Amino acid sequence: MSLREIRLSTTPTSDAINELRLGDIVYLDGLMYTAREGVYMRALEDKANIPMDLPSQSAANFHCSPAARINDDGSFDMGAVTATASFRFAKWLPEWFDKTGAKIIVGKGGMTSKDYKDYFVPNGAVYLSTVGYGTGALLGRGIEKVEAVHWNEELGLAQAMWVIKCNKMGPFIVASDLNGDCLFERENAKIAKNISKAYEGTKPAVLKRYGETDDRSDELI
Amino acid sequence: MINIDLIQQTAEYLMQKAAIEIPEDYHAGLKRAAEDEENELPSFVLKVMLDNYEVAKEDRCAMCGDTGVPRWFVKLGNEATVEGGMFALEKALRSATAKATNGVPLRPNRVHPLWRTDHNNNVGIGAPEIEYGFEPEGEWIDLITVHKGGLFGTDYRMLFPSDGIQGIKRFYLDSLMAFGKRGLACQPAIIGIGLGGSKDTCMTLGKRASTLRTVGSRNSDPKIAEMEDEFKELGNSIGMGAMGFVGKNMVVDCNIEVGYCHTGGMPMSVHAFCLSSRRAVARIFPDGRVEHRTDPDWFTPYQRRETVEWEPNKELARESS
Image (cartoon, rainbow over all chains, first blue to last red; front, top):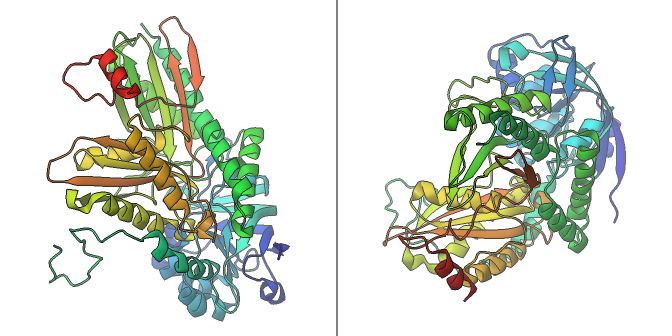
């Protein structure tokens, strides 16, 4: 088996999403916006109007804050772009899908198959992971233009909503599909067989920690 | 006396160099891992990472969008003096950090822990950290910047002598399993282990083991050096590779540093210096010479001294025995 390479629009058809298989390598074309906790809280909890027409302009949400600067003349310089870990944002996603019609969530490390089945599949959405997580320079080459930055004053550079025009931006890797299957969980299951061998001969620490028991009436010795 | 403008100018250059150019020792280690990896998914990941280092250098762009939390380690020879004193030095390093954040650009990662205030320049209360070390001879100053990621891959635990080496191995494996899944630690990484010290110095030792030692270096204590080899192999035997995919390469190298601790305890910390293992070093001399390198060479025999008096000849004899 060799990895499939696919070019995908950030306003994809449902057929195009349906085509994607776990482990496919994807390159994106079109507008993509960054949104993480700052944007989610502002749009969903503070009910601020999202300054874009979604999903018609973009159905791709990048969990990212770029290394970027706003110049004195108002233009932008974006250097490296890298995703941040997505599991922290799961709680906002159901409402976010409702509000924005997002079909592609791009980030680091994916979410659980439960999140995929509960939130992604009903909305016809999939998760794409960045590769290696440190490919910021490479992803930077896929940015044709920084279209806009919204909410910079309210949220700061790192949490602002950046709108970028992608031209074969990637690579990304398909980490969930429309079955709600999770690439990382599939890999975890394969690795699980080896774990006991690596741990052979080790023993639990003499002083335990909460977390190793969740009963707070337990002693840890 | 070392010129303060030269210090600031060098510090600005180091900030840029650390963010853009992967150090040679880590690069070589990752190339070996890429050649050795047999599984398709992690092989692809490692190939893309190696491409990314080249693109970063060509485009003079930060290698990773998360440019970490820039910090400074400063080492002074005993005879070194800085124009304007240590106050001027700290001001220069803070200025260089702010200027490079806007210049490269870097991501303004540093915010207030509660109010999330972001000065957009990676400078704030206690940031960047500036730590000091000294050597018994020399008129030079070493500036070392490290841009380590700040979220995943680090843990601390108070173990006890009765936990033994097997307890150390278990906590090491626990840390790799906890942060290696889904590749949150951005492995393959340089894993640093701190053993001993007080709780805070235990963390410091481990962090320095991961960031201030190079891939391929070994502890001067031959038994600890053997442990480093063994732990590297153990970490790679889990079968977890880049991004947590089935693979052979989790640990590019394992560095262990120790410090004397309370007689009843054996505190341990684990740290992961990621696929963007960013560090840059320069030695500045009073005559204006600047020598650039990527090996911080922090853990000298003097830093690992064991006795009240510093007797270099005796320490060297002990090391070579």
